[in-house]
Amino acid sequence: MSGALGRHILCEAFGCDPGLLNDRREVERIMVQAALEAGAEVREVAFHQFSPQGVSGVVVISESHLAIHTWPEIGFAAIDVFTCGDSVDPWEACNFLIRSFKAQNATTTEVKRGVFRHEPVGQFAET
Picture 1: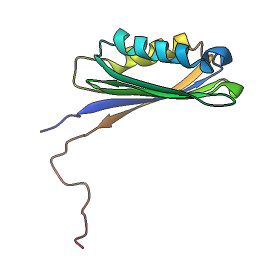
Picture 2: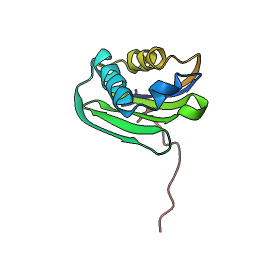
Picture 3: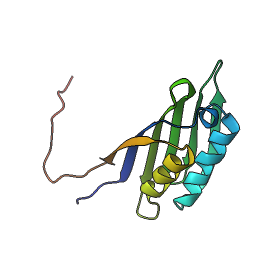
Picture 4: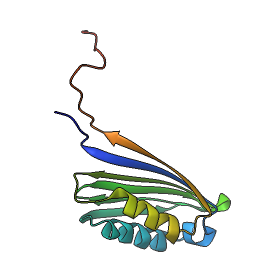
């Protein structure tokens, strides 16, 4: 068996709109919309507004999750989009988020999760 169980995109979004990044309701709305844009099925949503600033939250989807942590004071958002299966494209969600938060620059990395290999890649010591 070969392939991966899921795709996990790690996004560093810079130069974002600080007002958006500090608005819990708007961050939540954008994150949920990103999941829907990618074709995901939203299950649960949890977001928190920090004092004096910043928002953290997660959108749980049937296919895994989207998560965000914001630093409005520097216009930065750390974004994760993790999807399993072939029906949802995590890049659709990620690109929507970059546009919606008005990022001037973003770096992204895709990690394949649950990659199956034919040969063992490591060994665990018995205790």
